[in-house]
Amino acid sequence: MSLKINIHHIRQNKSGQITDQFTILPQELNLPEPKDTWRPLRFEFTCTNAGDLYVLTGKLSSRIAQQCSRCLAPVVIPLDVDVHEEFSRLPGLEDEDIHHFYGDEIDIAEVLRENVILNLPAKTLCSPDCRGLCPYCGADINHAPCDCKPQSGDPRMAVLEKLISK
Image 1 (tube, rainbow, N blue to C red):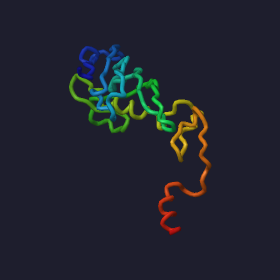
Image 2 (cartoon, rainbow, N blue to C red; image 1 turned 90 degrees about the vertical axis):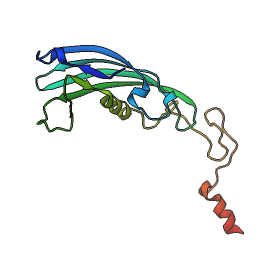
Image 3 (tube, rainbow, N blue to C red; image 1 turned 180 degrees about the vertical axis):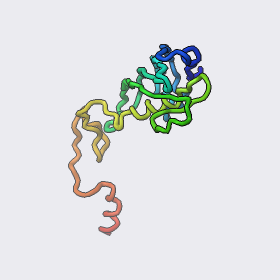
């Protein structure tokens, strides 16, 4: 499937619109690994001729299977991205927010990829009050407290402490 919008029939019609929808496979956007965590994405959009610009607005929706950053439990998170992008065929428009294109087709794959990646959560949690794993025994503290006693010092330095004590 091509992620291109053909603007030929609205090119001469100021305020002309194209309304459509795509179902996009994760491979088409070259999304970050692992690929099996991504569900197909749905993009419903309107492309409007605004004179020298073509304005793309829409909603990109999907679900992503990830692991909780604290306890490693599987989590499926919804992804709902509002897309608002501007495109121009005029090379003289120097603006970093305007994407340039040539011909009668706007390739939206890279724009959608950027929108998805920028809207991914920085830290995935199974719940806001997730307590995570015990740093000593690895038990999931959300299900039951462990019997480990807090140790003083950094546990990553334990091997060095043993060397020094000899």
